Amino acid sequence: MRAWRCATLRCMSSGVVLRTIAVVVAAAAAGGGAASAAAQAAGSAEASAAVRVDPSWKPPTTAWGHPDLQGIWTTDDMRGIPQQRAVEFGTRQYLTDEEFAARGTQREGARETQDRDAVGTFRNEEGTRTFGYTSMVIDPPDGRFPAVLPEARQRRQAAGTFGLGPFNTMDDFSLYDRCITRGAVGSFGPAVYGNGARILQTPDTVAISYEMVHDTRIIPLDGRPPLAADIELLMGDSRGHFEGNTLVVESSNFTDRTGLGGVRHSKELKLTERFTRIDPQMIDYEIHVEDPLTWEKPWTMRMTITRQPDYEIYEYACHEGNMALRHILSGERAYERAAADAAAKGLAPPERVFERVNGPDRAR
View (cartoon, one colour):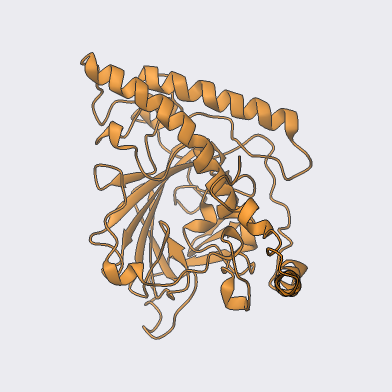
């Protein structure tokens, strides 16, 4: 039950890298060396994709003729790439060669640390490739989330174990804390571990089983109508079809209980996902987000999911009835008793551990 906390760690650690790269950006701009939005660093993983090296490359197909997307894929190689683009990059989607070299040095250092300090399966999965993307968000062109509508900002989204409490009821925890779901997009968000998913295909169905919180999406391809509008699902109701070599998945009928882009979305959320195999080891994964009750305009993000050597998906043994939430709630009651005892003696309240763990210096 630890993914977007992990994503927070990733974002905090990558902030140092982004500041370093931003200096390089400023220097390049001063010297007239700014790259175009379409330029890719020569040594980047995206530049090495088969479809870019050889535009005539075709993905493998299943026995029934669909592009073959099957296998275990991860977002490990997206570690270190921020969701939103630093303003210094403007509308550039890719790093220059010099900027990419700076990121490559940081990523290699992260992998060396991972290999040195890894313990069991809870290692810090840093991937094996370095991509030169300046952000995951690719539209709007500046690579930043559109403005959130005022009404949407008022929606309560439980911080849970990422916050400071207090913890009084189950509603003070996120659905992720409770091992229920990370959401349709969050389930593939790169974290410190558990970033895998298994894709299976039949002639009329695609199934995606996520490693973290073990959700499985069943996506019909047979043209059946969507569910009635009053049937709401945490992962939405999905229908898929192929457009050339791309699997297109359109989803609606969401609840308003999950978040996306740091915001709790509305029931009007609609997702259009596109899976395009660009290499034997890579799939470009784009997510187009529309929710007129949450953002001023639609937006799109892109991740490239990849194969990792010897990667296996193990049981994610997390469920809502586990002991963590019970212990947190009982710990909060114990703290209240300790604070009351201290007040009765004229003493300051005891330290709240969550304020130390989740405070401003979190993950340092």
